[in-house]
Length: 580
Image (tube, rainbow, N blue to C red; front, side):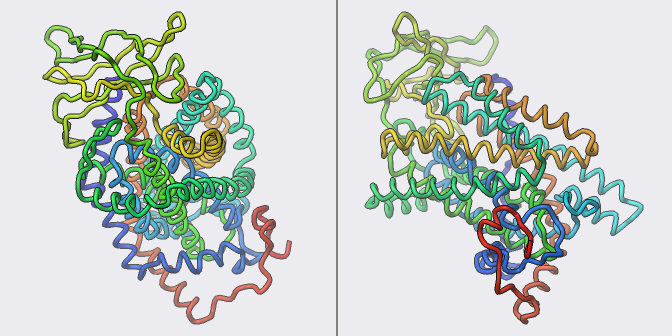
């Protein structure tokens, strides 16, 4: 697994090179300026569109605006927030949150552009089951431009679908299942594979009903999930209200200066904060990935820009609102830089484990867990770590490292029986002699809530993680399904659904163990989609901008009318047409 993780990290370094991040940032700035700061229109006109005031009973599509937005938010306002923000803080420090904000704002411009393009080129052969997304955009745009080159557009579309399926299986599926299994195991000791089976069954029951069932489930779940989560977050922040100004200042300061290592937090350079913050924001908001336009293409509307403005609301809700609440909860409770829960006395000595001729690798012998301090409850199979000083890390800008181990119960006592190894020329040195329980991803957020609201916090996050993960996997299954339809046709859909559900179980079998592995895994899938979709946005984005400016001109002139009798909220959730 260590070799596989190293390979994934190397691929991720290429996919998320500084030049890639600068390109993404520049793309967001480009369409923000080109559209005349469409963020304003998204936050003012978008809610009116969402309410159904501009609906027409003759419009074709499968979902209402609200259902489409809910489906997309179910894939973004979820573990991308709960686990993704925890990863950002753990690996990049508080400054990573600032860069998430930046991407959240400029990502609205990217999302507008890609959704409008998807609506302009969507396949409406079956009005009740439209198909859209970057694969249709590039294949149809190239065919319109040069009919003899239609094969090229289809090839690029197929390439996007391959990256879509990679991201579906990693971030949209296995990332979710892993986090749910970990947090459920931490709370109840339920074997992770059992959680995987339950998730696979629940997801399968929904996705077999197609896009309309997915939209209906999302429209009912998402508003409840978001409201409950935000209320809980505000309660925690209310308890730590006096700390909030200082936390916001810390986020801004450490966006441009490194944060020193403190206890469980092993430090983060500015470059690490930028890298992790942008990665997590793009994963959370999906801006530039090309996934969200697939769901929006199923919306009932004859105005592509109208759906684009609804789509642009997504990154704001997801990254600016929900991610910020999550980050402040984690920072205000101090769980991110917690003290060691156990203390070795004396400190265990490191041993060389590398074979002759190999690079030096160091580890620890099995050792009994020292007396536990506080309310921590250990279980067999739980991951722990020690913080050590060794060779300099370019990514973190210091010489701090985590050495992971696994707890085993022997005759009523706990032992760390299986330690990983650390490749370093110089022997590692303990920093504090402490042993820490590892809280990967969503578990860290759960512990943050529970430390502020004992008992309730963990239950709330546990419920949110289950619901968010289920809705995310359901929506991402649809994204991947549309890629399969483009590549192989409708005949391959059922086989795809079975494979998707099987991978949920695979993700819970212990293949992923740490924050770093989790980050490498999801970064690979996200990066693969960006490499194909962003060039499409840059080359064809002018068409979206032209349509946007024409729509806004019509809106300003009063040509676009709205209804004085919009549908009721329940009708919007159910996806009923106007006057149905």
